[in-house]
Structure formats: structure tokens, C-alpha cells
Image 1 (cartoon, one colour):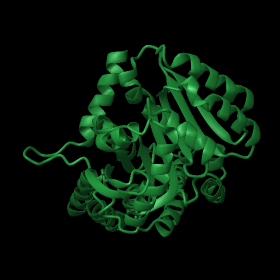
Image 2 (spheres, helix red, strand yellow):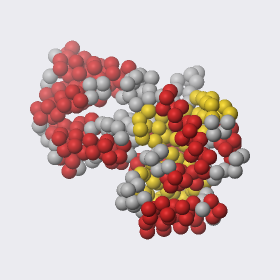
Image 3 (cartoon, one colour):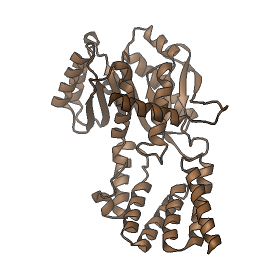
Image 4 (tube, one colour):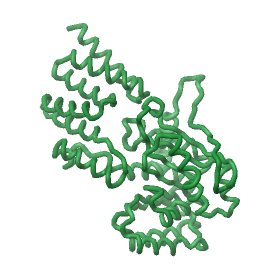
Amino acid sequence: MKLRQLSLIFALWLMSFFSLAGEPIVIGETLIIDSKVLMKQVSINIRLPTSYQASKQKRYPVYFNLGADDSFAATAGILQSLSHNQEYPMPETIFVSLSTETAVSIINRGVKSEDFINFLETDVIPYIDKHYRTQPFRILASGERFGMAPLYGLIHNPKLFQAYILISPWITDKSGLLSDFETFLKSSKETSAFLWLSSGDEPKVVPNYNKLILLLQQHAPEKLDWKNAQHNQYISSVQSMISLPNALVSLFADRVLAPDSPVISAGVESIKSYYQQLSDNKYGYAISSENAIRALGMAMFNKGRVKKAIEIFQINIKDYPNSPHVYATMASALTEKGDLTGALAMQKIASELATKQNDAWESYYKKVLIDIENKLSTN
């Protein structure tokens, strides 16, 4: 079972960066920035989403990782494989990671968690926000020797990030973080954030990790959405490969509603109200209701209520005119209705937008377009 899971993750990683023979595989780039905290120029690694260049108006959440160069490709692969299919089950994100050189510079200062947080707040986040199209939703992830930094950030600067992922964190007694965390939990009842923690059975991790979980069980604020995952069968070197996908799926699970959920079943206004509340109360930017409205339309379509489905799909076209998928869905409904001319017009738009946006469905939409053209030519 372990080998099967790891093989699947590795396969997804490879598929995420597939290219034609002879073409370079570009995962990201290294940036040089001026650091006020470290008082010198330092390097960070960044990977932009697949749609970044084509979707000029789109803004993205940012995933910050304190890991060094050796984890960059694997993490980028996970982020890509989880977001390339119409941003399901997670949205596309800008991925920023420390370079090994920069991580060493901070380590040489004594591996103080506040150094990492100060560096991110003072140097990295302002630079990324200035030069890239970002949303006000940030994720901070780390583990092992750097695992105390996200916890320190949650305690001392809880508004800087909206989600924290700690994988096998080495929480030392001398750091005083457990005591600080207990005080924070008891005094910060309105804190709203996502916190994911996971560990294996590493001797240096387990004792204080268990104390951390106990504190959360006893004192976690109601709005602190925290999860605990145990992966005792895996060594620390593969913890992130196992835990990170689960953490990200859990973080963004509320963006994806089941087709038979009460919210979708109640209709379009119910769906829009749900996503408006989600946008206002958690993410801080507009979360698309496109997929949920499509699910409602498909439910009507599968019940044979094609006319009603088309009305719902038309709402999606009005609300999301730059999405290739709303036109492809409409084309499918019109094909079923027998309106091949209308379906052809919709599928052409879907294919053109998918090509322009370098969408993962591009080749499939072109194939459907050819199929519709062939049907028209034989009628």
C-alpha cells in the first residue's frame, strides 16, 4: 500500500512537468532580492501557475515554503497536480520557497523562528505582492527543523498568514513555544485560521508534538480550523509527500461542494450566497461559484430537464465569460438538445479560450469541436 501511494504521487509529479522530447522542463526560477533582515542580497525560488501568463487579470493565493532547494520540485509537482484540472481540488497558487543559501543564512543566526517570520514579513511578502498578481490569502508551510516557524507566526503575527501547515515539526523545549502557544490559545478566542499538523513516529518529534495536540484539544478557539494527521508508517523524509496533498485538499475542501449537497440542491441563489460568505469570512477574495452552478445545471440535465439546465448554464456564461468550461458545458447541453449549430458556436469559444489560457482541457475541447463539425457535415 505504501509503495502504491508513493508511486501514484511520483507519477503525478512527473505528469505535472511533462514536456515534449528535447524541450527543457522549467519548474521555476530563482530571484535575487534585497533583505533588510539579513542585511544583504539573498535568493528565493518561485514558480508561477500555468495560467499566469495567459490570464493577465487573474490573481493568485501564495504558498510559502521554508524548505530549501531539494524540496522545491516535489512541492511544485504536488501544487500543480492538485490544481491543473479546473482548479480542483485546490486553486492555482504562486509558490515561493527559500533557497538553500538563504535558509543557511538564517540558520547561521541560530535558527530563530522569529528570523524566518521577520524575513518573510519584511522582505519576501512585500516583494512578491509588488511584482506579482497576488490574492490576500497566504499559506505558510514547513517541517522538521524549520517547523517551529509557522507556529511562531501563528502566535505572534496571526494576520500575516491565513493557513499554516506543520509537517513533523521539531519543537524544542528551550524554544518556549509550547508555553507561548497555550497562552495564545487561551487568550485569542477570535483567531480564525487553518492549522494542519502531521507527524510520524520520530523520537525527536513525538513528545512535544503530542503536547501540542493536547493543547489544541483543550483550548483551541472555535474559529481555529485545525487538523491532526498521523503517518507512523512513513519515515520523515517522505512525510511531506504524504501529508502535504492531504493538507491542501483539507484546506480548500469548502470550495468544492458535492453535487447533491443542500446548498446546490437549493438553487442558484443558495450557491451564490454560500460562496459570498466563504469569500468574505475565510479567503478575503471572490471564490468562484462556477463549478457549483455547473453541478446544479448538470443535475437538471441528467434528470432530462435540458431547458432548465441551459438556463442555468447561461448564468455561468454571464458570470464567468472568460472560462472555457462554461461554454463547453453549454455546447454539451445544446448537442443533446439537437442544436448542433449553437453547440458548434459554444465549443469554438471553449476551444479558443482553452488554447489562449493553456488550459489542461485544451486538447479535449478541440476534439469535441471536431466531433461537432463532423456531425454537422453529415446532417
